[in-house]
Length: 370
Image (cartoon, rainbow, N blue to C red; front, top):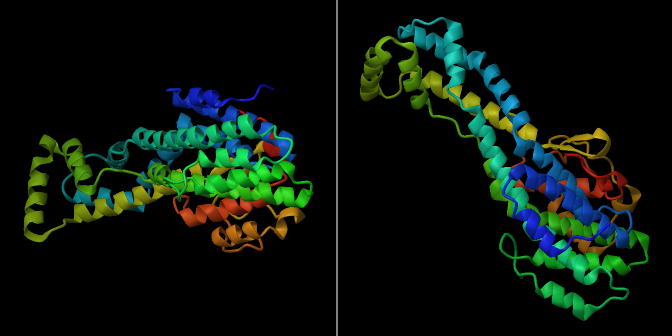
């Protein structure tokens, strides 16, 4: 299989169609992972994990599943108790339509497509940003250092010096460490130590990557919905005679005299319920990782698997130190589920356990589907 060059990475990252670009990124990560495996053996390198994560990102980028999920969520909230309070309040103000029509109008206020599109755009930008940086550095590493038959410290130093010092998101100190450890793994004859060096490299890259991705992840899960007063105005115009000017006058007067009206309070409760449910639904969608053979990991649950003997009791001092930094339960995969994927510490805990548990999963080297 021909090796990907840094210019190949640039070409993929430069594609403007986010769906086509995501497919090309996924395939490129897969090819990079196989090339690295030629030297390190069947221990999962970071690119192997990245290929499957990129594949999963494609589901969000395409958007169809997310739109259907969000539409169902709006329907559920529109049929629930929070919507009942809005309907009752509107009827008390003189709204004439039947309950079913009010609920339909209430659901129609929310632009599910816009919410899904915001998440898709954020995920697509994050997918591209990480690939353009880390994918290119892997291609550079492969091109310049993978074929070394004996360690060349001076040549490695030249490669490392091409990476910026300092902490992420702007610095690349973690990548400098990661590629140094990956290079050491190329020449390590002790199987366990080689596995630990690749795992250490994976975790260092993962920590850099997730720091860089924090803004896009938070944006993807941040659900923007209209505020209560905007929804109230739209309901008045759509459900009351003459655009609801009489009811709106009464509400406006009430606000001047005493602050929030019963409709304001009912709508605020409803909007908060919608926002919470949409974020939960979107989080559930984003926090699913499908691996080889149809295995699906729910990132909010503790079932990444158990640690194999090769990674259960690390001996490499740098690996022990890093695991202690990012994993509050370093002796097991318990409590690894991330209930909020936008929470950096929870996310890194899950990733640390995932990388350790699946370090020898040869299924990660299979080609991810579209």
